[in-house]
Length: 251
Picture 1 (cartoon, helix red, strand yellow):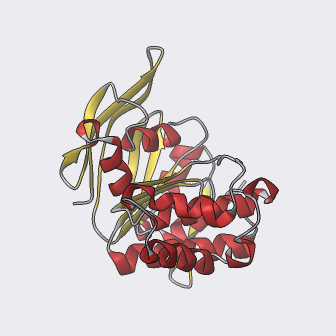
Picture 2 (cartoon, rainbow, N blue to C red):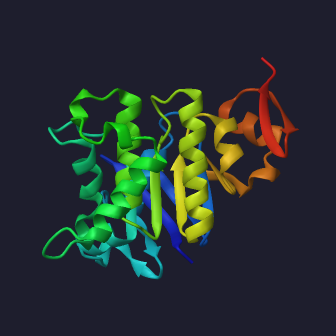
């Protein structure tokens, strides 16, 4: 098991945000965390990555409690893409290469350089390699953040709105690549998204959060109109298009 979240709880100033969240992610599995604004999706990722300390429960990554792992061990095992990335004065190449830091010893190796170059090509960033990241658009900056997480070669990839600021083509390109990495390298991945249909197209499994608890979870093919209505308060139909569920609002 790549990820095992056991009865996770978290509170801000005594206000409960997460309550008894339990789920697992297997090797080769991409799980989408879905739900309205403010239900704790980002907080859940930060608890998994030990940025926040939960008020209850545990997070195990390949059997190890993240709160007992050294920061370097967390970086070796978990790649995290936040909603907002920094815009320090680094080139695109250097910003992505920094993802190799947990694996670099005395100096940058040829393997580190090759892995970085490969990630840049796969995300269409190779032509921007020498540009400073504070000169990039929001979408380009988001792709840099994803590339940096991928060069870490983590066992678990956490993505908080990975397609924010991206146009439709780049959304498809980046999610296809994430899905391919998950499938080929048998890693686990968890992503939060607001776009239901895009999430259900690329994820293997879904998890609906409602009022800090898991309201429904399962294979994406098992999403029902009632689930969506209960979570979002909106009547919908769920159709199948090219083998993927598509949520269509009725009002």
